[in-house]
Length: 122
View 1 (tube, one colour):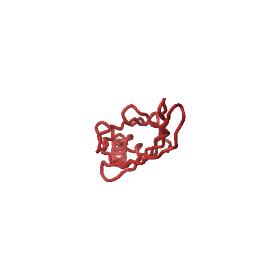
View 2 (tube, helix red, strand yellow):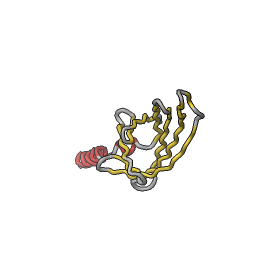
View 3 (cartoon, helix red, strand yellow):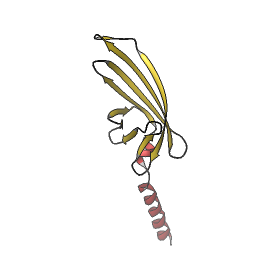
View 4 (cartoon, helix red, strand yellow):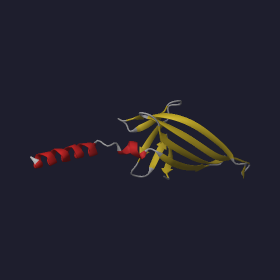
C-alpha cells in the first residue's frame, strides 16, 4: 500500500513539474539595450512586473543623444508605461496599446521587442 501511495505521489510531482511554465517565471525583471547610429545613440531599460492573471506592466525608460553635424546633443530622457498580456500558447507578451510582440529567450537571457534585443540583468 505504501508503495502505491509513493508511486502516485511521485507521478503527481512529475506531472506538476512538467507543466511549469518556465518562460512565464522568467519574464519579471530588468532588461537593457543599447543602440547607436549616425543620428543618435540610445539606452533602453525595460522593467517588467507581473500584474493580475496573464497581465504584466512594463516601464520603459529611454535615454538618448541626438547627433547633429557629428556632435552629440544634450542627454534626453523619456519614460513610458506599457500593459501587456501573456499568451500561454506562444509564450509571448503582446503590448496592448500598439500591439508590440515581446518574445522571450530564457536560455540566452534575452528578450526581443520586434527586432530589438534586450539582455536581462536581474
